[in-house]
Length: 311
Length: 311
Image (cartoon, rainbow over the protein chains, first blue to last red):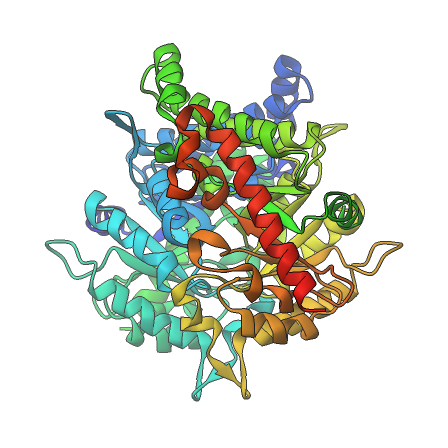
């Protein structure tokens, strides 16, 4: 799957992932009204509105980008109807040829970590049969519990040729509270990154330069990205924090390797709620999906220019 | 909800939580056969088997313990049917008067953390109405992302009078890989614990000695429990790792405060799969729920004796 991601990045010339993190306040009025008319102001109504909203965006951008990253929390808050739409979104994006990164940030130990790995990336056994629960291509994983929490994912990644991105240095302002604390002269995130490099080296596809095991480092911390790029040479870096959180294309060049690969930059509300920004307001709520397409094209241009200018 | 938990601990005289972490290999053959006959060897069939298994255990133990802790991964692996049974289990346990600790170990930032908090402990807005997504009383939370990941939970806890347990020192063998690393002469988990104490002090119920914010420290690390008990005086400690993972009653006394409160000890497979242990094999699979009841009574006795003997 890492090789499919790389092939699609080359094909689209866009190391970009669109974060499908829908909030009701992003969903245009006409979609909400239609869904509530059909299902009432219920969890099912909210889920239907989000599904229609997602579908419009995916239809408008699937040919421009290699991947999407649905944030499961935004679905989970709507209970079972929300989870149902998460799954439908994953399936639909895969039908459209997109690589799906489930932003689930799961982290647990032993048989529990195994259950998460199986549920999101693998197949669960039921009697004599097996089934995919959520069936993403990649998942994000929290490292706080150590190797016991990550190894079950490595096993499933190797078996299913899927991948994970381990949280190393997150994009939020308080990420430093624990992640930046110095241990033997190096910040915690660097120790985590060294461990990611070790996991990555042990979880390579049969062909290709990049591992099934990647890392998350926020666009808001470009200096850390530069250092960690070298610490984890075989790992793709998933870079959140572009756009709404403040990251710009020129901040991101050091997240990439010299081959122009090694990083994929996420933008969520900057794309999916583009029509609510002044820059794309001309599209209006009715044409929110076209606004998203315009925002993807602008983001591609910004990142391309930044990458070209470093040569 | 922390006060309800304390009242129920006093009423049952059992600082015990039963971990509802069902695995198919624990579910007795007669339950699996019946469910597969009705639904086939499908995700729905697996979910039905787990639901019937859970219900049998809850019916057998609800009068003995204050709380249960369903581990969501064990349900999530079965996709939407699994999540549906998770929710049904939460609802059923609450009907039975049990306090429900959702072992979800969620951790994210900003609006995403808010979505998890709302989805598991609060109410989500849909148009002019609000709904509970999963509706647990407590949830476990991962601290790796810092305050940004925890504060949205604190807000919901204060509003809804619910609670969280923040992972401090987990019970697994590799928990030390990051958690034990020394920062300014103290292990990371102690820094996290100090932060938990600060969050806890700011999130107290109107009456009572204990905060809505608790911590997780594994029974397998009693020495750390003793130290952290003093670092977080207002926090209940959720103690996993009793039984199957090796923790014993006598290891646990220092997790408690002098008032006999401040800790609640979890056992999962030691209770729910008791009938598969030699000690309770006489019950057989048909009477698995009675085996679970016997195991709860033995655990109560073990912990009571340990607490009494320290006086």
